[in-house]
Image (cartoon, rainbow, N blue to C red; front, side, top):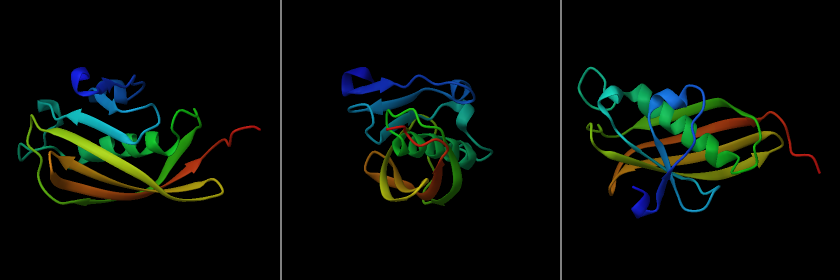
Length: 133
């Protein structure tokens, strides 16, 4: 994947057991990717919705505080599951900061497999520590 501009993101905690998350572009850009592996599948054989939520929470959260090292927590993540995702597919997400009000960040994301939309999400994140000036 590195040849396509994707590079692995260093994962810690639970994400180190989830699978490889990739980022494309400059640090702080809101584009992330993931290859759907067999351990991500649900009972129906496609990507488990819970696994997609983990990917979205991580990708949107990283987009919320690009390269600032701020602590954040997810307060709300509303997700629309649009289409099933087969094992072996490559997911991409793109997130946008919609608004910021004090310590609250409002973000929106879309998840694609190729040119097919498979999920959307809107969420609210809280910044635990604002940067010192």
